[in-house]
Amino acid sequence: MALQTERYEDTQLYKIRHSAAHVMAQAVLEIFPDGKVTIGPPVENGFYYDFDLPRNLTPEDLEQIEKRMRQIVQVKHEFKKTVISAEEAKKIFADQPYKLELIEGLEKGGKDEYGNPLDGPPDISIYQQDTFTDLCRGPHVQSTKEIRQDAFKLMTIAGAYWRGDENNKMLQRIYGTAWETKEQLKDYLNQLEEAKKRDHRKLGKELEIFIFDDEVGPGLPLWLPNGGVMIEELEKLAKDMEDKAGYLRVKTPILTKEDLFVRSGHLPYYAESMYPPMEIEGVKYYVKPMNCPMHHKIFGSKGRSYRDLPVRLAEYGTCYRYEKSGELFGLMRVRSMQMNDAHIYCSEEQFEQEFMGVVALYRKYFELFGIEKYVMRLSLHSKAGLGKKYVDNERLWLKTEEMVRRAMDNGGVPYVEREDEAAFYGPKIDVQVWSAIGREFSLMTNQVDFAVPERFDLKFTNKEGADEIPLCIHRAPLSTHERMVGFLLEHYAGNFPVWLSPEQVRVISITDAQNEYAESIAKQLRESGIRAHADLSSQRMNAKIRQAQLMKVPYMIVVGDNEMQAGQVSLRVRDGSQQNNISLAEFTDRAKDKVTRRASEL
Image (cartoon, rainbow, N blue to C red; front, top):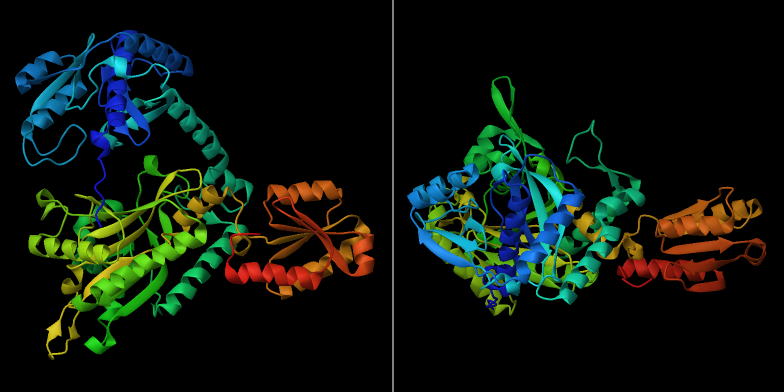
């Protein structure tokens, strides 16, 4: 059922943040009278404004700006909206070149001040408060008094190219956050502190999961042995689930001729996100940004009957996408990715069952990883984007969007709708999940493709003996290795369940006299399929235990003379519990049970 959720843009919190951005711009221009302003929208947890200033800002400047903002909001300055002509706007902002560029764009129509597409030229409006006037559509609070002086804070300074184009001038962006109450601000700041501790970039380095290297290139992660283990475990999980659901595993090359992507339609729709082609013997080749065109080739490699459908082709294929350097972010935005990809070819009659089978798979993963909060978002096309951003077939857009709605409604799965966020070839369900500390991630997708199968002449013989074009469902329930590992690092704070932990057991000898016994235990555990390592270093026992704790190893087996003579072990668990003098067989059974069940508890 579609959830009737209030749009962020309509909330009081949005208005507070938008208004706080204007107050911040006023304070900045008072301190830097020659400064040039650009745009200052609210974002997920706050707001920002980009400035062209005579010098680089410092943390001390933020303090001064914030102090002036508090003085401004103490006074009841009303936000007054006025609709004006383009000529009037140009006179008001005659000394603001960035605003003049925006006004010219609004005058022509097509895009708003944030670069979002419009059906036609919009009204041009300004908002005034106190001494500050801004080109803006709103909405805003009634007056600055509604911005509580103890419920906002300026956060950071960053660089940002004008309009996100690296060919344009670098501006200075000030990020701030604003809330309705002091308590909400405090909670948010506490969450940020916890998020810093859980930052996957920090934990990934400390736990030796992955690295980046300048000589390899930005956005191209190198997986260390511990990361390799996690990848193998996630692949094993996917294969177990997909084998049970009747998927067939395929492999495709990372390089292909240009013709394939022309035929699929990714060129020109997706060209900006693809690496430039290489030319060999007069033929252009691309590294693949996605697997689907090759899977279409595999499906079409032989005749298909309705009796063969659905056909589910799965591949953990490595893809390469060009992300701008300023948009790269740890494992969450990379240029090389290993995708939990699959394509399901089915008839219209089979669509609902297949589509909801993917949704059910999502929910199994939510349960396994302890994901309690999530939102499924039905991403739709926009009429204005037909023939530009989207395949130009409104009839099939409306038909497939309704098919997805009906499937979700019949399955009793709540979802929200978002216009102008579909794939170029059809509607999709995007899944937003929240980690254990409430941080939001975009992880999973379930897409309907009504357009590309026809381009590849894909067909099957239906019950009437006629050729029919199948629908294709693109799905990635475990996202990519990169994004999934990044999410799991932050979700678990590195304290992975036993089955996912790169090292499951650390065997610790108290003195060198027990080293041989410790190594024999580690060997027996490895032979039982448990990832174990013996710490035979010259450090004291407490230092060895501390090192294992820093690496967040679930189980530590400590052996001294008593354990060696009795043929037993003492167990220390990551959660702080202990169990002395147990048999190795008893512990092995316990550990294997947790691994086999992929249990969340230790």
